[in-house]
Amino acid sequence: MKVPDTNQNVDVLVIFGITGDLAHKMTIPALYRLEQSGYLHCPVVGVALEPWSRDRLVGEFKASLGNDGQSVDQDVLESLASKVSYVHGDFSDADTYLRLKDLISKYKNPLYYLEIPPPLFARVIQELSSVGLASKGKFLIEKPFGTDLGSAKALNGTLHEIITEEQILRIDHFLGKEPVLDISYLRFANEIIEPLLSREHVDSIQVTMAEDFGVEDRGSFYDKVGAVRDVVQNHLLQVLCLMTMEIPIAGNYGAIWDKKTDILKAVTPMDPKTTIFGQYEGYLDVPGVAPLSKTETYVATQVYIENWRWHGVPVFIRTGKALSVRSTELRVVFKRAPHLHYVSDLGGLPPNEMILRIDPDPSLRLQLASKGAVGTRGRSVSLDLPFEEELGKLPLPYERLIHNALIGDYSLFIREDSVEESWRIVQSLLDPDKSIIGYKKGSFGPSDANALCKGHLGWQRPWL
Ligand code: BG6
Image (cartoon, rainbow, N blue to C red):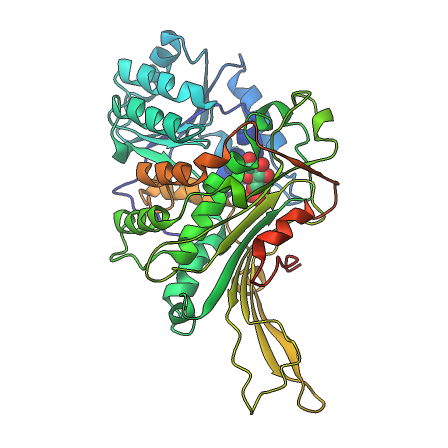
């Protein structure tokens, strides 16, 4: 990770919702890792409703660690705990913000991290503004940012009445994943890859995010959301952006954001006629799910990118819960080489593919054809690069994102126009009355999704 730039360093990190589930699972382990690497230079102030003492909060920090099987270094934990303080109070009570002000008014460059339900974003920022704390800070905001195009625009409008766009850092944790970050490097640092990524050579692109677990204890959240809002509008479109955008004209974050918005603007709207929605059997029994819910736990769809580079190349996107495997991958399927005299016998080999596995075990695979040992028949061979083996232990996504926000590197956050373009792309899939096909847990989703790829290489089982 980057070495901190002390000129831009945040001098206090304020986390709204520090007692919540996201903090427990992601933020606290990320803070611990930042402390361990010597990157956490500022105090951390938690704000939440629970009437906890500071010691109780520190106890919660301990409980959040070690769940990944890694041992917890007590010295690191103590040094992290020494930076933590806690303000408890209702987010709609002005007194909460006055007490926070007593604690942090001396700092010049606060970072406010809003890990709270989206309906509270504007309220919290407004209250911070009322006590004079908003204008000098940056705001890290968790997804979901809006629930459709209209609400995303309205939320942007409301926030812009209080703070500027430059103060808002919208989080998508996929953008902190190492293999996702690696997409730009693989493309723009490799002359043998980038020139091949266009309609001249690419037949189609497959984006798969398969999860082998269901909605579990998140029924009441998920049932209002569904797969399109939960992961397609954000994670999967962001990954697609990185794989298909043009090279930014400069290394600064504004230049990167411009190219991401450009590519999203070229993506055709998803169409219910070329979309399959599925729901796993048993979903309706999940606590918090409505009895006749039509929320999709699976979706497969397709888009085109209407620009010079990608015209005519379909992008197939699918995701589902309770499937047979857990795997997130981007698969670029190349056109077939012509079968001429010298290599006439390709023996029905699959086309070349470049597969970037994001989860689990981030890795890259190039699928090639070579001559078999006997005769002239070909065989399919693969060149594999497991990132962790090559690059060592990788930072956690939240560790990287919080670190970047702390040092003033905003390239991994999402600008207003990208969010709105993503909602435009998925908007027509948000109809609550869509038809849903049931599928068995542990299957690969509704088989009707296979027809989407007609004329191209069918859906491939994820590379495991
Ligand atoms: C979250 C979704 O944003 O991403 C979850 O709300 C999903 O439903 C999760 O399971 C996947 O993220 P990861 O990093 O665990 O693959």
